[in-house]
Length: 206
Image (cartoon, rainbow, N blue to C red; front, top):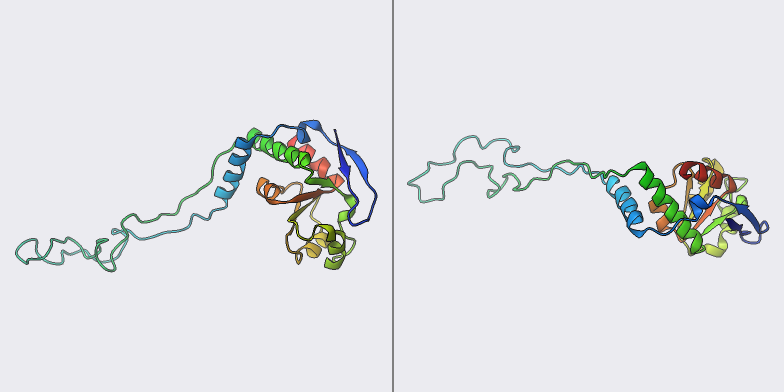
């Protein structure tokens, strides 16, 4: 199986690189991809919200008035949720929203996403995308044909020049082959991968 390497903004020539069909030639599995994306979004939730129930609010230890004979409704504490400055009826507690997903399912889902991106002509390989200097202008010139698209650039390793050049470009995200995640892939209009990053992705998901 082959991927066509396009020349970006007239720089570089088109080429062909062989990739593993076991990674980039899988069928589209919508249910698995949905589970994969949901798992990541759920795991990103902080889950730190907290409220005080009637037992957490300080005070209220004594009965505000006697049970009978006052003409008022019976009350056992001033910290009841019915009272001002009382506790919350169903108080929120800190919790984890993380969902379990097997490694085999994760790798299978990532392969399915990459394969579908390739079928939709949204996945490209280009080695000349990494700028020689940390210049936003240089990278913007190479990406001018897709200025209105949401782009994801995947490098083999963290590159300082690429990170600095892309951070001021709207709609352009940068990651490495080791930190590639399903949400970034699904949310991108186009994914540009270097040749070395392709090899690392194959090692990671193969």
